[in-house]
Length: 432
Ligand code: TYD
Ligand code: MG
Image 1 (cartoon, protein in one colour):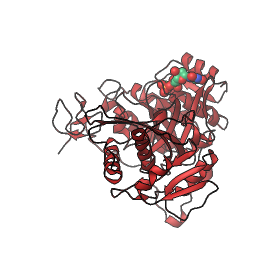
Image 2: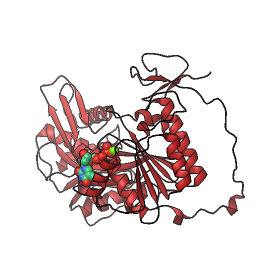
Image 3: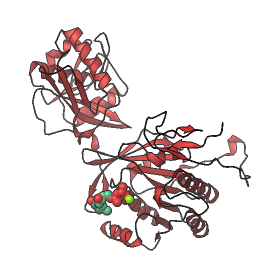
Protein backbone atom coordinates (compact mmCIF):
# COMPACT_ATOMS: atom_id res chain seq x y z
CA UNK A 1 0.00 0.00 0.00
CA UNK A 2 1.32 3.39 -0.95
CA UNK A 3 0.67 5.91 1.80
CA UNK A 4 -0.40 9.28 0.59
CA UNK A 5 -1.51 11.15 3.71
CA UNK A 6 0.19 11.69 7.03
CA UNK A 7 -1.09 13.12 10.31
CA UNK A 8 1.01 16.10 11.35
CA UNK A 9 0.13 15.52 15.00
CA UNK A 10 1.03 11.88 15.44
CA UNK A 11 2.70 10.76 12.22
CA UNK A 12 -0.06 8.22 11.33
CA UNK A 13 -0.04 7.28 7.64
CA UNK A 14 -2.99 6.37 5.45
CA UNK A 15 -3.80 6.02 1.76
CA UNK A 16 -7.10 7.88 2.12
CA UNK A 17 -7.85 11.35 3.36
CA UNK A 18 -10.06 11.66 6.43
CA UNK A 19 -11.24 14.76 8.25
CA UNK A 20 -10.19 13.16 11.50
CA UNK A 21 -7.05 11.18 12.18
CA UNK A 22 -7.94 7.54 12.87
CA UNK A 23 -5.00 7.20 15.24
CA UNK A 24 -4.91 10.30 17.47
CA UNK A 25 -8.36 11.69 16.74
CA UNK A 26 -7.17 15.19 15.79
CA UNK A 27 -9.24 17.03 13.21
CA UNK A 28 -7.92 18.44 9.93
CA UNK A 29 -4.37 17.28 10.52
CA UNK A 30 -3.94 14.89 7.57
CA UNK A 31 -1.66 16.28 4.90
CA UNK A 32 -0.81 14.81 1.54
CA UNK A 33 2.76 13.81 0.98
CA UNK A 34 4.67 12.10 -1.77
CA UNK A 35 6.81 9.07 -1.13
CA UNK A 36 10.29 9.35 -2.53
CA UNK A 37 10.26 7.79 -5.96
CA UNK A 38 13.87 6.92 -6.44
CA UNK A 39 16.54 5.93 -4.03
CA UNK A 40 19.79 7.77 -4.43
CA UNK A 41 22.81 5.52 -4.91
CA UNK A 42 25.10 5.44 -1.91
CA UNK A 43 28.40 7.01 -2.90
CA UNK A 44 30.60 5.41 -0.28
CA UNK A 45 30.19 3.40 2.87
CA UNK A 46 32.38 2.04 5.61
CA UNK A 47 32.98 -1.64 6.03
CA UNK A 48 35.43 -2.62 8.76
CA UNK A 49 35.92 -5.35 11.34
CA UNK A 50 34.22 -4.30 14.58
CA UNK A 51 37.57 -4.65 16.38
CA UNK A 52 39.06 -1.91 14.22
CA UNK A 53 36.37 0.66 14.67
CA UNK A 54 37.49 3.30 17.11
CA UNK A 55 35.15 5.79 18.64
CA UNK A 56 36.60 8.33 20.91
CA UNK A 57 34.61 10.39 23.35
CA UNK A 58 37.13 13.15 22.76
CA UNK A 59 35.56 13.95 19.42
CA UNK A 60 32.25 14.92 20.95
CA UNK A 61 31.67 18.64 20.81
CA UNK A 62 31.14 20.30 24.18
CA UNK A 63 28.29 22.74 24.50
CA UNK A 64 29.86 24.81 27.26
CA UNK A 65 27.39 23.48 29.82
CA UNK A 66 28.00 20.10 31.43
CA UNK A 67 24.35 19.21 31.99
CA UNK A 68 23.47 20.00 28.35
CA UNK A 69 26.41 17.82 27.23
CA UNK A 70 24.92 15.02 29.31
CA UNK A 71 21.51 15.41 27.68
CA UNK A 72 23.27 15.03 24.32
CA UNK A 73 24.84 11.84 25.69
CA UNK A 74 28.21 13.41 26.52
CA UNK A 75 28.46 16.21 23.95
CA UNK A 76 27.31 16.65 20.36
CA UNK A 77 28.47 13.93 17.98
CA UNK A 78 30.04 15.23 14.73
CA UNK A 79 27.94 14.25 11.73
CA UNK A 80 24.77 13.93 13.78
CA UNK A 81 21.44 15.63 13.20
CA UNK A 82 19.65 16.69 16.39
CA UNK A 83 16.26 18.24 16.87
CA UNK A 84 15.60 20.66 19.73
CA UNK A 85 11.84 20.93 20.16
CA UNK A 86 9.75 23.09 22.45
CA UNK A 87 6.92 25.59 22.68
CA UNK A 88 7.48 29.00 21.10
CA UNK A 89 9.15 31.41 23.52
CA UNK A 90 10.53 28.75 25.84
CA UNK A 91 14.18 29.56 25.16
CA UNK A 92 15.36 27.31 22.31
CA UNK A 93 17.04 30.09 20.32
CA UNK A 94 18.66 31.48 23.47
CA UNK A 95 20.08 28.10 24.45
CA UNK A 96 21.36 27.38 20.95
CA UNK A 97 22.98 30.78 20.62
CA UNK A 98 24.76 30.14 23.93
CA UNK A 99 25.86 26.71 22.69
CA UNK A 100 26.96 28.27 19.37
CA UNK A 101 29.12 30.74 21.29
CA UNK A 102 30.79 27.98 23.32
CA UNK A 103 31.52 25.91 20.21
CA UNK A 104 32.72 29.00 18.29
CA UNK A 105 35.60 29.25 20.74
CA UNK A 106 37.00 26.23 18.92
CA UNK A 107 35.99 26.92 15.32
CA UNK A 108 33.46 28.33 12.93
CA UNK A 109 29.77 27.97 13.75
CA UNK A 110 26.97 29.05 11.43
CA UNK A 111 23.60 29.96 12.91
CA UNK A 112 20.91 29.97 10.21
CA UNK A 113 18.02 32.01 11.53
CA UNK A 114 15.19 31.61 9.07
CA UNK A 115 12.76 32.76 11.70
CA UNK A 116 14.31 36.01 12.82
CA UNK A 117 16.36 38.67 11.05
CA UNK A 118 20.10 38.88 11.65
CA UNK A 119 19.37 42.11 13.54
CA UNK A 120 17.08 40.29 15.97
CA UNK A 121 19.69 37.60 16.49
CA UNK A 122 22.29 40.32 17.10
CA UNK A 123 20.06 41.86 19.78
CA UNK A 124 19.82 38.52 21.52
CA UNK A 125 23.59 38.04 21.15
CA UNK A 126 24.15 41.43 22.83
CA UNK A 127 22.00 40.36 25.76
CA UNK A 128 24.06 37.23 26.04
CA UNK A 129 27.34 39.14 25.73
CA UNK A 130 28.27 37.29 22.58
CA UNK A 131 30.55 39.04 20.18
CA UNK A 132 32.90 36.71 18.37
CA UNK A 133 34.16 36.46 14.82
CA UNK A 134 33.78 32.70 14.57
CA UNK A 135 30.03 32.80 15.00
CA UNK A 136 28.36 33.54 11.68
CA UNK A 137 24.70 34.50 11.51
CA UNK A 138 22.67 34.04 8.34
CA UNK A 139 19.01 34.72 7.61
CA UNK A 140 18.95 32.16 4.77
CA UNK A 141 15.72 30.19 4.62
CA UNK A 142 16.35 28.17 1.47
CA UNK A 143 17.24 24.61 2.40
CA UNK A 144 19.41 23.94 -0.65
CA UNK A 145 21.28 27.19 -0.16
CA UNK A 146 21.88 26.40 3.54
CA UNK A 147 23.26 22.99 2.57
CA UNK A 148 25.58 24.55 -0.02
CA UNK A 149 26.89 27.04 2.56
CA UNK A 150 27.50 24.27 5.09
CA UNK A 151 29.35 22.25 2.45
CA UNK A 152 31.51 25.10 1.28
CA UNK A 153 32.29 26.77 4.63
CA UNK A 154 32.63 23.52 6.58
CA UNK A 155 31.81 24.88 10.04
CA UNK A 156 32.41 22.91 13.25
CA UNK A 157 28.66 23.03 13.79
CA UNK A 158 25.55 24.46 12.12
CA UNK A 159 22.20 25.43 13.63
CA UNK A 160 18.96 25.79 11.69
CA UNK A 161 16.29 27.84 13.52
CA UNK A 162 13.71 26.60 12.68
CA UNK A 163 12.89 23.59 10.51
CA UNK A 164 9.33 24.90 10.08
CA UNK A 165 10.54 28.12 8.46
CA UNK A 166 13.00 26.75 5.90
CA UNK A 167 11.89 25.45 2.52
CA UNK A 168 13.12 24.38 -0.89
CA UNK A 169 12.03 25.37 -4.37
CA UNK A 170 12.44 21.72 -5.34
CA UNK A 171 9.28 20.91 -3.44
CA UNK A 172 5.97 22.31 -4.59
CA UNK A 173 4.45 22.70 -1.16
CA UNK A 174 4.19 25.60 1.26
CA UNK A 175 6.78 26.26 3.96
CA UNK A 176 6.07 24.24 7.07
CA UNK A 177 4.13 21.53 5.23
CA UNK A 178 4.93 17.87 5.72
CA UNK A 179 6.70 17.51 2.38
CA UNK A 180 8.89 20.55 3.01
CA UNK A 181 9.77 19.38 6.53
CA UNK A 182 10.72 15.94 5.30
CA UNK A 183 12.73 17.22 2.39
CA UNK A 184 14.69 19.74 4.46
CA UNK A 185 15.36 17.28 7.25
CA UNK A 186 16.56 14.73 4.70
CA UNK A 187 18.92 17.28 3.15
CA UNK A 188 20.35 18.33 6.52
CA UNK A 189 20.77 14.70 7.55
CA UNK A 190 22.71 13.96 4.38
CA UNK A 191 24.83 17.12 4.70
CA UNK A 192 25.63 16.31 8.34
CA UNK A 193 26.66 12.73 7.61
CA UNK A 194 28.56 13.46 4.40
CA UNK A 195 30.62 16.30 5.86
CA UNK A 196 30.83 15.01 9.42
CA UNK A 197 29.37 18.29 10.67
CA UNK A 198 26.77 18.24 13.45
CA UNK A 199 23.59 20.09 12.57
CA UNK A 200 21.04 21.07 15.20
CA UNK A 201 17.57 21.94 14.01
CA UNK A 202 14.88 23.71 16.02
CA UNK A 203 11.25 22.55 15.93
CA UNK A 204 8.22 24.17 17.49
CA UNK A 205 5.72 22.24 19.52
CA UNK A 206 2.05 23.15 19.17
CA UNK A 207 -0.22 24.21 22.02
CA UNK A 208 -1.66 20.73 22.45
CA UNK A 209 1.75 19.62 23.67
CA UNK A 210 2.39 17.30 20.75
CA UNK A 211 5.36 17.66 18.49
CA UNK A 212 3.42 18.68 15.41
CA UNK A 213 5.75 18.76 12.46
CA UNK A 214 8.69 17.40 14.42
CA UNK A 215 6.77 14.24 15.44
CA UNK A 216 7.20 13.23 11.88
CA UNK A 217 10.89 14.03 12.00
CA UNK A 218 11.53 11.99 15.14
CA UNK A 219 12.35 8.90 13.10
CA UNK A 220 14.68 10.75 10.77
CA UNK A 221 16.96 12.55 13.21
CA UNK A 222 19.61 11.06 15.51
CA UNK A 223 18.50 12.83 18.67
CA UNK A 224 15.37 14.61 19.86
CA UNK A 225 15.72 17.01 22.77
CA UNK A 226 12.62 18.52 24.31
CA UNK A 227 12.60 21.78 26.22
CA UNK A 228 9.71 22.21 28.66
CA UNK A 229 8.68 24.62 31.37
CA UNK A 230 8.22 23.44 34.96
CA UNK A 231 7.66 25.76 37.88
CA UNK A 232 9.37 28.66 36.11
CA UNK A 233 12.39 26.58 35.11
CA UNK A 234 13.33 25.20 31.70
CA UNK A 235 13.84 21.47 31.60
CA UNK A 236 15.81 19.97 28.73
CA UNK A 237 15.70 16.22 28.22
CA UNK A 238 16.26 13.74 25.41
CA UNK A 239 13.39 11.58 24.20
CA UNK A 240 15.56 9.90 21.59
CA UNK A 241 19.30 9.64 21.27
CA UNK A 242 21.17 7.30 18.96
CA UNK A 243 24.40 8.27 20.72
CA UNK A 244 23.56 8.05 24.38
CA UNK A 245 21.12 7.36 27.17
CA UNK A 246 17.93 9.34 27.44
CA UNK A 247 17.89 9.60 31.21
CA UNK A 248 19.65 12.93 31.66
CA UNK A 249 18.05 16.31 32.20
CA UNK A 250 19.31 19.85 32.37
CA UNK A 251 17.30 22.26 34.49
CA UNK A 252 17.89 25.86 33.57
CA UNK A 253 16.71 29.26 34.63
CA UNK A 254 16.19 32.16 32.23
CA UNK A 255 17.77 35.33 33.52
CA UNK A 256 18.64 38.78 32.21
CA UNK A 257 21.64 37.36 30.36
CA UNK A 258 20.35 34.10 29.05
CA UNK A 259 19.98 30.61 30.44
CA UNK A 260 21.91 29.29 33.38
CA UNK A 261 21.86 25.65 34.43
CA UNK A 262 21.19 24.89 38.09
CA UNK A 263 23.94 22.93 39.77
CA UNK A 264 21.83 21.22 42.41
CA UNK A 265 18.27 21.33 41.20
CA UNK A 266 16.90 18.64 43.52
CA UNK A 267 15.16 21.04 45.90
CA UNK A 268 13.79 23.67 43.54
CA UNK A 269 10.20 22.45 43.55
CA UNK A 270 9.85 22.42 47.31
CA UNK A 271 7.53 25.13 48.54
CA UNK A 272 7.91 27.31 51.60
CA UNK A 273 7.50 24.31 53.94
CA UNK A 274 3.87 25.02 54.77
CA UNK A 275 2.49 22.63 57.34
CA UNK A 276 -1.12 22.29 56.23
CA UNK A 277 -3.47 19.31 55.96
CA UNK A 278 -3.18 17.53 52.62
CA UNK A 279 0.48 18.26 51.89
CA UNK A 280 3.07 15.46 51.73
CA UNK A 281 6.57 15.45 50.31
CA UNK A 282 8.32 12.87 48.19
CA UNK A 283 11.37 12.36 46.01
CA UNK A 284 10.80 11.60 42.37
CA UNK A 285 13.44 10.96 39.74
CA UNK A 286 13.16 12.88 36.49
CA UNK A 287 15.49 11.56 33.88
CA UNK A 288 18.47 10.97 36.08
CA UNK A 289 17.78 13.81 38.48
CA UNK A 290 16.25 13.35 41.94
CA UNK A 291 13.64 16.04 42.56
CA UNK A 292 11.80 16.72 45.79
CA UNK A 293 8.11 17.36 45.14
CA UNK A 294 5.14 18.44 47.19
CA UNK A 295 1.89 16.62 46.69
CA UNK A 296 -1.30 18.38 47.73
CA UNK A 297 -4.67 16.71 48.10
CA UNK A 298 -8.12 17.93 48.84
CA UNK A 299 -10.85 15.44 49.65
CA UNK A 300 -14.19 17.18 49.57
CA UNK A 301 -17.17 15.34 51.07
CA UNK A 302 -19.59 17.54 49.15
CA UNK A 303 -18.67 16.23 45.73
CA UNK A 304 -20.03 13.86 43.16
CA UNK A 305 -17.22 11.33 43.33
CA UNK A 306 -14.92 12.96 40.79
CA UNK A 307 -11.13 12.55 40.86
CA UNK A 308 -8.93 15.22 39.29
CA UNK A 309 -5.14 15.16 39.19
CA UNK A 310 -2.57 17.60 37.89
CA UNK A 311 0.90 16.19 37.38
CA UNK A 312 -0.17 12.66 38.33
CA UNK A 313 -1.96 9.85 36.50
CA UNK A 314 -5.69 10.02 37.33
CA UNK A 315 -6.15 6.26 37.01
CA UNK A 316 -3.37 5.65 39.50
CA UNK A 317 -4.93 8.21 41.84
CA UNK A 318 -8.28 6.39 41.67
CA UNK A 319 -6.51 3.10 42.34
CA UNK A 320 -4.62 4.47 45.35
CA UNK A 321 -7.77 6.00 46.82
CA UNK A 322 -9.53 2.63 46.44
CA UNK A 323 -6.64 0.97 48.30
CA UNK A 324 -6.88 3.53 51.13
CA UNK A 325 -10.65 3.03 51.30
CA UNK A 326 -10.32 -0.75 51.52
CA UNK A 327 -7.21 -1.06 53.72
CA UNK A 328 -7.83 1.81 56.12
CA UNK A 329 -11.61 1.82 55.94
CA UNK A 330 -11.74 5.52 55.19
CA UNK A 331 -14.60 6.89 53.15
CA UNK A 332 -13.47 8.41 49.87
CA UNK A 333 -16.00 6.97 47.42
CA UNK A 334 -18.54 9.61 46.50
CA UNK A 335 -16.23 12.42 47.61
CA UNK A 336 -14.47 14.70 45.19
CA UNK A 337 -10.73 14.19 45.17
CA UNK A 338 -8.25 16.75 43.87
CA UNK A 339 -4.53 16.10 43.67
CA UNK A 340 -1.84 18.50 42.58
CA UNK A 341 1.92 18.17 42.25
CA UNK A 342 3.30 21.63 42.96
CA UNK A 343 5.70 23.43 40.66
CA UNK A 344 4.14 22.00 37.51
CA UNK A 345 6.15 18.78 37.81
CA UNK A 346 4.55 15.73 36.24
CA UNK A 347 5.21 12.41 37.92
CA UNK A 348 5.61 9.35 35.75
CA UNK A 349 6.69 6.72 38.26
CA UNK A 350 5.33 4.86 41.27
CA UNK A 351 7.80 5.94 44.00
CA UNK A 352 5.55 8.82 45.05
CA UNK A 353 2.54 6.52 45.77
CA UNK A 354 3.20 6.59 49.51
CA UNK A 355 3.27 10.40 49.53
CA UNK A 356 0.05 10.52 47.50
CA UNK A 357 -1.62 8.23 50.06
CA UNK A 358 -0.19 10.27 52.97
CA UNK A 359 -1.51 13.49 51.45
CA UNK A 360 -4.99 12.02 50.89
CA UNK A 361 -5.16 10.62 54.44
CA UNK A 362 -3.88 13.93 55.82
CA UNK A 363 -6.67 15.77 54.00
CA UNK A 364 -9.37 13.33 55.17
CA UNK A 365 -8.19 13.48 58.79
CA UNK A 366 -7.50 17.21 58.57
CA UNK A 367 -4.13 16.57 60.18
CA UNK A 368 -0.85 18.18 59.17
CA UNK A 369 2.23 16.26 58.15
CA UNK A 370 5.55 17.35 59.62
CA UNK A 371 7.48 19.26 56.92
CA UNK A 372 10.65 17.36 57.82
CA UNK A 373 9.05 14.07 56.76
CA UNK A 374 9.42 12.63 53.29
CA UNK A 375 7.51 9.63 51.90
CA UNK A 376 9.11 7.28 49.35
CA UNK A 377 7.66 4.01 48.08
CA UNK A 378 5.22 2.25 45.80
CA UNK A 379 1.86 1.01 47.09
CA UNK A 380 0.40 -2.27 45.84
CA UNK A 381 -3.25 -3.33 45.58
CA UNK A 382 -3.06 -5.33 48.81
CA UNK A 383 -1.75 -2.26 50.62
CA UNK A 384 1.84 -3.51 50.65
CA UNK A 385 4.55 -0.85 50.53
CA UNK A 386 7.30 -1.66 48.03
CA UNK A 387 10.73 -0.37 47.07
CA UNK A 388 11.31 1.18 43.66
CA UNK A 389 14.47 1.87 41.69
CA UNK A 390 17.17 4.15 43.11
CA UNK A 391 15.96 4.08 46.74
CA UNK A 392 19.49 4.85 47.92
CA UNK A 393 19.82 7.92 45.72
CA UNK A 394 16.45 9.22 46.83
CA UNK A 395 17.38 8.82 50.48
CA UNK A 396 20.75 10.54 49.95
CA UNK A 397 18.99 13.39 48.21
CA UNK A 398 16.41 13.68 51.01
CA UNK A 399 19.22 13.90 53.56
CA UNK A 400 20.97 16.63 51.55
CA UNK A 401 17.72 18.58 51.48
CA UNK A 402 17.47 18.42 55.26
CA UNK A 403 14.60 15.98 55.71
CA UNK A 404 14.96 14.32 59.11
CA UNK A 405 12.53 11.41 58.79
CA UNK A 406 11.98 9.13 55.83
CA UNK A 407 8.91 6.91 55.66
CA UNK A 408 9.74 4.08 53.30
CA UNK A 409 9.38 0.35 52.56
CA UNK A 410 11.15 -2.30 54.59
CA UNK A 411 14.74 -2.73 53.39
CA UNK A 412 18.34 -3.12 54.52
CA UNK A 413 19.18 0.51 53.79
CA UNK A 414 20.67 2.74 56.46
CA UNK A 415 21.01 6.49 56.62
CA UNK A 416 21.84 9.38 58.91
CA UNK A 417 18.14 10.33 58.78
CA UNK A 418 15.53 8.41 60.77
CA UNK A 419 14.27 5.66 58.51
CA UNK A 420 10.74 4.51 59.33
CA UNK A 421 10.28 1.25 57.47
CA UNK A 422 6.71 0.17 56.94
CA UNK A 423 5.35 -2.97 55.32
CA UNK A 424 1.69 -2.09 54.94
CA UNK A 425 -0.39 0.98 54.35
CA UNK A 426 -2.14 0.60 57.73
CA UNK A 427 1.11 1.75 59.39
CA UNK A 428 1.09 5.01 57.43
CA UNK A 429 -1.38 7.02 59.59
CA UNK A 430 1.17 6.82 62.46
CA UNK A 431 3.26 9.41 60.59
CA UNK A 432 0.45 11.83 59.81
P1 TYD B 1 13.72 32.48 22.81
O1 TYD B 1 15.05 31.87 22.98
O2 TYD B 1 13.55 33.39 21.65
O3 TYD B 1 12.62 31.32 22.72
P2 TYD B 1 12.27 30.29 21.50
O4 TYD B 1 13.41 30.31 20.54
O5 TYD B 1 12.09 28.96 22.16
O6 TYD B 1 11.01 30.76 20.88
O7 TYD B 1 13.40 33.33 24.12
C1 TYD B 1 12.47 33.05 25.07
C2 TYD B 1 12.18 34.17 26.00
O8 TYD B 1 13.28 34.42 26.85
C3 TYD B 1 11.83 35.51 25.38
O9 TYD B 1 10.53 35.85 25.83
C4 TYD B 1 12.83 36.48 25.91
C5 TYD B 1 13.42 35.81 27.11
N1 TYD B 1 14.84 36.09 27.37
C6 TYD B 1 15.26 36.41 28.65
O10 TYD B 1 14.46 36.51 29.59
N2 TYD B 1 16.60 36.63 28.89
C7 TYD B 1 17.52 36.56 27.92
O11 TYD B 1 18.72 36.77 28.17
C8 TYD B 1 17.08 36.22 26.58
C9 TYD B 1 18.05 36.13 25.46
C10 TYD B 1 15.74 35.99 26.36
MG1 MG C 1 13.34 30.99 18.54
